[in-house]
Length: 184
Image 1 (spheres, helix red, strand yellow):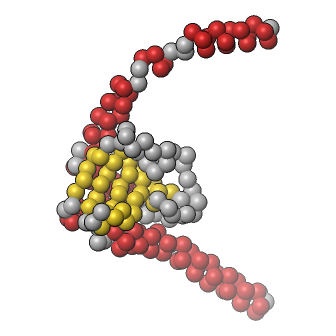
Image 2 (image 1 turned 60 degrees about the horizontal axis):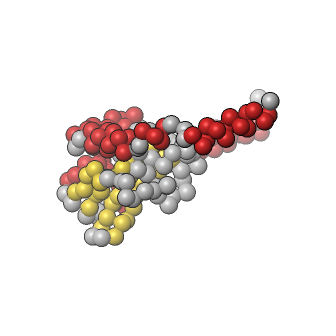
Image 3 (image 1 turned 60 degrees about the vertical axis):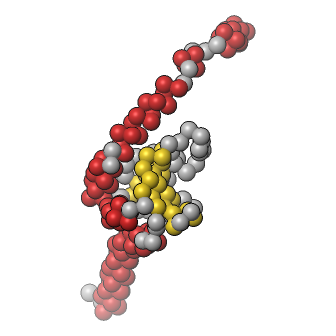
């Protein structure tokens, strides 16, 4: 093999290895940044709903705590996996985690499908949680009965929808019939 080709292969191999190592460091760095940015939070509030299409009058606070140990244990349960930037699902999120210092909202993120976090005002997208993090976060939420409170909230929300909302009204039925007849 030619000496120039060997050199080129070595350079490409080293470059590829450096790129791979850089990619592998992204998730731990993101995890560290999130944890350190929330380390001084004095209040954690978990509420129903995500960040978009908000209806504050219908949202419910499922947990609010000023216990530093609770905030720290939540943050320790979160670890990010390698995720492609700009990846989004189309929902607003199931739960929002709001972190305050005094009365000031420091940062908020929403949980999506029990597997991704979207940090409000971040352009990165939805960040995948590791398998271990998903299990730890689910256990953390379960220990505080947040999953049960969310289920009850959703049941109560469904009960508030009038039965008539599922049925088309007479005017809608007659206009649909008229449009079908005129097209025939």
